[in-house]
Image (tube, rainbow, N blue to C red; front, side):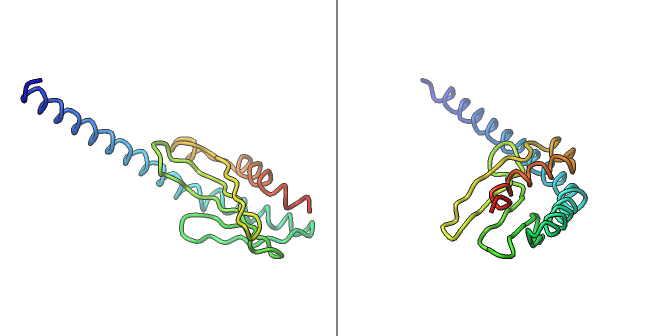
Length: 141
């Protein structure tokens, strides 16, 4: 291979990598903006309302909102908790529900929604449905 060909291909690879990185950053920024809007408007009120309804059934939970996430912890077993947060480590940002149970920290993850458009249109019904499904083992006790 000739030197000019190698240099041209290297430049093309660099340009393509930079373009992909810029596109990824734009997607992550769009998802973060959507999450910032949906979190206080939909996710936090739904989690609090669910916790109040469960308290009436003698299942006591604490809802807190550190940083850009929601933590739902059992009052009786604080090591048992759910975390709802935006994860943007891969190409498509996702909102995850991470359930941690017990001192050994058995963790299960559920994807609530994937992508900025889905995050922006996230509704109370979907949030409640997924939170209740993640809490099912706690409710069975």
